Length: 291
Length: 316
Image (cartoon, rainbow over all chains, first blue to last red; front, side, top):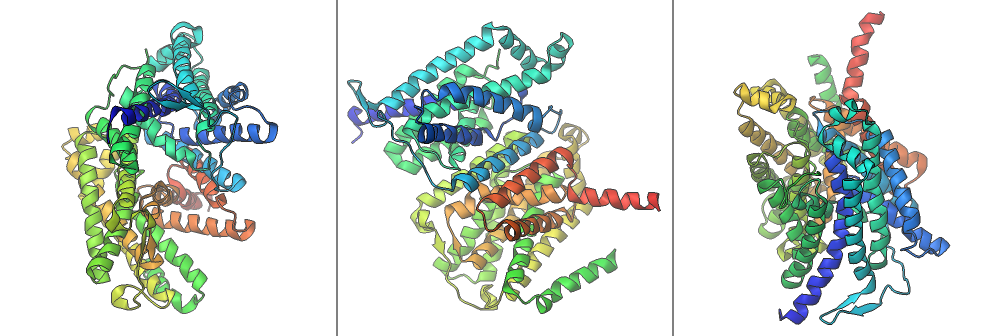
């Protein structure tokens, strides 16, 4: 049964899902690379963004892709404010404390969503939700294809931002040596919050690309948070290209693993990869830091 | 101090004579169960400073071991309880060996424990003999030997014994060399190692004890609620609930998990009384409490009491 005619479409679908994983992981890896904190609230922030897209569509009829114009800035502001107010200055030593704080934030967000939106799973039906594109070897749904393209564009844009703008240079300086950066006059707290803001802005974009092919529920963040961590550690913490390749790899692994060994095996593979990478190769497959 | 403890113990034992409503006995049972698992988590996370996000792995291992032994092999519930603790301890030893052998610390340790629990959750849902995604309905055979009772008072005594036992284990560890070594590891692992503390062995002991106690909690849960499924037993919600009580009560203290359990369950109940049974709202409150405590009161509610206790003579 495992002929190319079955495997290939599954692999392509895996790639498109992996692209969204990559986009989610981009924000996480940026936040890790600069602040050296593991943002456990990342999935819940994605959930909040997904609800944003959902209600913009349901109440105001805003197309999910057009909603990016609202959600990317909104994500940025939310992230900036969250870092400045709740997560706060990084204290050396106890990194678990920041992890616990972000865990607290995620509990609050998830359960506010349960309270306000009930636990139901919601989807949207756009004109193009079910539209298929024939790639010759496989039929792929249009939203998935758009997601794949957009993930590549966003990775490139983020890379450009970090490598060749003044803000990017400041971010890299802070990531490498916060004390030195402060000495040369960089406002480190501002750069921390900017990085967190850009990281959550990526989630705003990811939510717009994800909702046309997925669903939203209060606990949807939990589906993605461990996957995003897996992508990040696989690609090397703080590496953008690593996040992109890691995301695609995880997407394909999940899809093919699910096809060959049954659905739960695909998920299982993700977590086993996560454990194996953390234990045996904590720098990731392509482990170069944000530089 | 000793007098106060004796009185407290007498009150705890006599409680079902005074409190006869099923509701309040149920409340006390939840507090004791939360105390048990909080005290278990505290051994590793409080004294040893190894924050686990995956204690659901041990809770679930205990719950499934007890339920399956009773249902498939007809093992007596008391024996099954002990075996559940042993099985969970074994899972703890294994996951601890892997994590600590490869030097995972801090946030990385927290994440890998979460992943271990998720792996077990998926496995429990995928395998048929564990009931798959449907879960297991534990049959009710009332009788003290089966740890199942017609009244809540019976369950209360079991929960009380387990919770008090766990606090006693915490107390014993705090007074032992192991406890001192664990605190040294928490404060500075490299320095502890340099001073000759066998850090790997200490952390392994701590995680095994912690997991075994958590497994007892899982087994009790199965006997008390009579139903488990992969999400209830191994889900991330369990892990979070376990770590809340010791963090809010006071990390690395004997009574912290108990104080935290009372505060959390009490606040949850109060919230339900005031705001109705709104889904999610009590958890929102717990989340806020977690952030506030970690940020502003890392020594927990116990630390707050301690502060007042220390200040009193100065004002007098």
